[in-house]
Amino acid sequence: MKNRIIRAVAGIFIVISIFLSIYVNQNWLWLTGFVGANLFQSSITKWCLLEDILTKLGVKD
Image 1 (cartoon, rainbow, N blue to C red):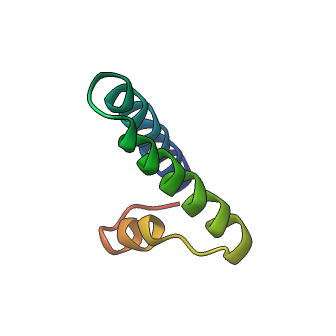
Image 2: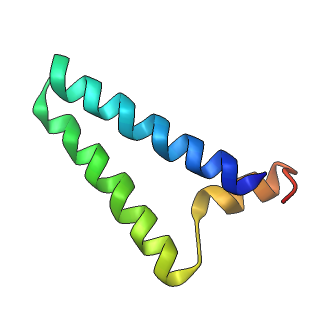
């Protein structure tokens, strides 16, 4: 369950930042890069802040 939530949140952030970069300002693409960098970092270190937050909120695997 946590993995699905993490993927959904990452996808939502990416889609929102792309729409904001098209309609508001191109600097919103930095958010897309930040999300991508965090996904890459979590694949290497096997640590994800959102996963820790979801665990504290009581979300099960």
